[in-house]
Length: 399
Image (tube, rainbow, N blue to C red):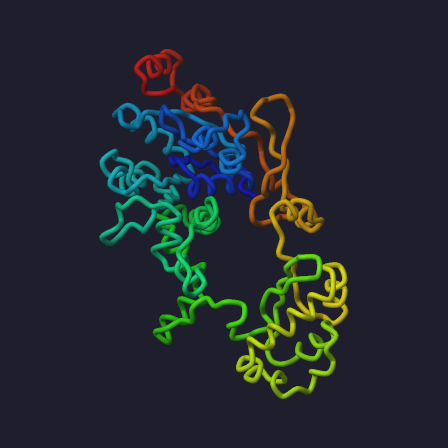
């Protein structure tokens, strides 16, 4: 879908590279500009004591890209990056605004070079306000500062962190969408624009329904235990063989009688304690105990069949190991094969991009690049003479 689109990715870590990876999967030509020491995520596993050639965390965000290593602390490196922008469609960066301004790589400067450029800045907190230049990481900017972490913690418990790069990749999806919208405009008008995304804003949007309630009513309900739910049947229940099942009750009272049949308690179908949403809420703790007892009489396979028979919406609470073996994971196209960086033709499974385009080549376009693997080729494509390229290498401007 994005074949012919040239993206310069001047970014490290996960959120911005994740957006670049989505664009790459969708066909864009993405050149990753790295510092001479490389993106820190290249040593993700070495940091935790494991040294492997294929790095599934780095590869997930960087498959199919080209890598050029430039020392942008040097004026020559900044000049080189500006030259790369001349023919680019997109400039994607997560460098803080102050650093970009000092290096002559701000939107104002680069848009003069290329008026059609879509310039995307992904930061922790946005480009305006007192925290515009504050470092941003998803556990801080997306999870903690936005209230997502506080609201997720059940009432009375201590805060806990989110899983690896969860907020980063939520922001990656939003960023890729914003870039694509700006590309549509640039194609129509011939003029690019600044696209601003942030971990903070993406976190607030992800929590948007609760945030909307807070803004409208000036209060929001806390996350409660299973026995304190406002809708007791929308809950989690454990089967005889130790599996947890997530139940989602539809609006109103249509699922009450079917649930009674699922758990073998037809005697409760007309029980006034549970026949309306209000009465179920008032007697929620007792109702959860009753459904717990019912689920405990059946195995996962048995209760699954009964739930389907009575058209109750449900899903198993699965581990990632179970998800990897779930046939729906394969059917949904949620796993793709990524070429190994070993270069021996082997592949290994990795998560797919978030949107599927049936009939299109929407998967990885190659392995993740080695640091500086494409430096010379990219410089040659800019028309630089071989001798000038050799000088750049000798002066440490490129690697």
